[in-house]
Image 1 (cartoon, protein in one colour):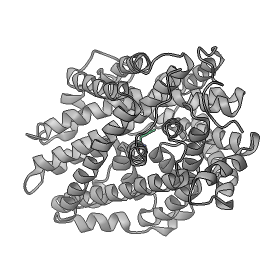
Image 2: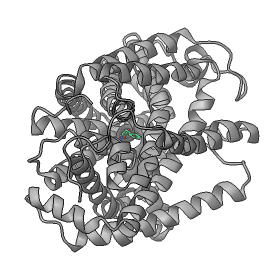
Image 3: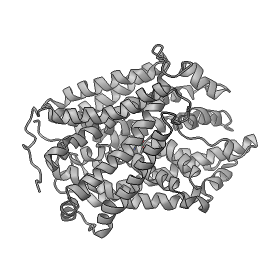
Image 4: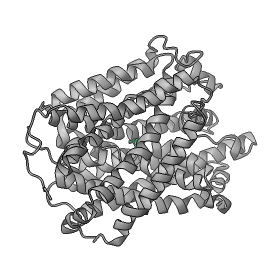
Length: 507
Ligand code: PHE
């Protein structure tokens, strides 16, 4: 095994963890989720989820990585021989996410360029699906590669794999040290411009106006927990991998709080920016906020270009900054997602980092080409829906039940974290992980299965419901289940290095 890499500085680690957490989810998912689930009132379940699941699990994963000093599979194996498969399952979920997350960054690169002369014209929706993505008529058709997506996608992979080949300290850390401060500056400019637009206040009003009637509904709580999991990159192998490069003396608990609060602050900032411009758009068109609200692909690539068209001045510049922020936020997350399997492969098969990057990243890059074909968006939509649902609910649930109830590691982990951290963990942490999180995730899982199974395959996936059962089965269920099955297979494969070798805390 190669000598284990380490972060150069504490700030380097924190920036990388924040870089992983702050991603597309903050910019295009949070604002729409909050708005749809009670507006200002959403902050109550959201903060509750952050404090009872988000930060506790972050502390737990930081502790696991720091204690066992391995990628997710190695960490799970060192925790208990029979649990390696869960680590691989998490890594495979990350692998699948990386295959389409990269494609969205590629779109954002194209759109950064388009914003220079507002290439999208007046019909931004027609432009996205027709001119740019050249979307096939129906789902399941593949067609051929779309050059406008293919070329920026190649750039994305070259950058990410290039960063990863340079290693933890010289690659990941430096990339985040440059990209995260730049992202914050760019985003602050965006938000300042946004809130000074005419009509901005109408949007902010709609965003913050609390609707307390919603707060007792389980869907709102499920949405809050879902957002926290996705947004903090927990239960995806990522934070375990990153914290395995921490030096011995590291304040785990404090780092987790800093990461969690920074991520939420960025989320709030994004909510303000997005709703300010939505308010501007609604006002200038004389319509209600409800008519312009969107999330995901629709928000970034249809609504935003339309808003930029209407800008009083310097719309091009605003557009460039916005898409640039998507690119930066996306890159720092993608780097963390790919690192999970780079680390996993290099340890298990005893190969160099460079080889692991080229093999793992190479396969992911090849698979990502599917999403740059005419039928790409349909696949992306379905895979994203399924892998996230199962990533969030199933993996998180298995993780906390295993650690809190089966292996009963909470006490040992608490001692480990407390020995090196300023903030002492007490019963808040134990109860959150042992009781609250399992109950909420268990409920989410049952609800999810009920929803998906009782409706047969007639699931509404994302924005493009109405897909055929056979399509949903293959690109949804099969992909999600394959991640689990291949994970178990990889756990059975013999280690090419000695997993016991190396310095770690065995208790
Ligand atoms: N947390 C990041 C985001 O908000 C990236 C991410 C998404 C990581 C999904 C893992 C899974 O976009």
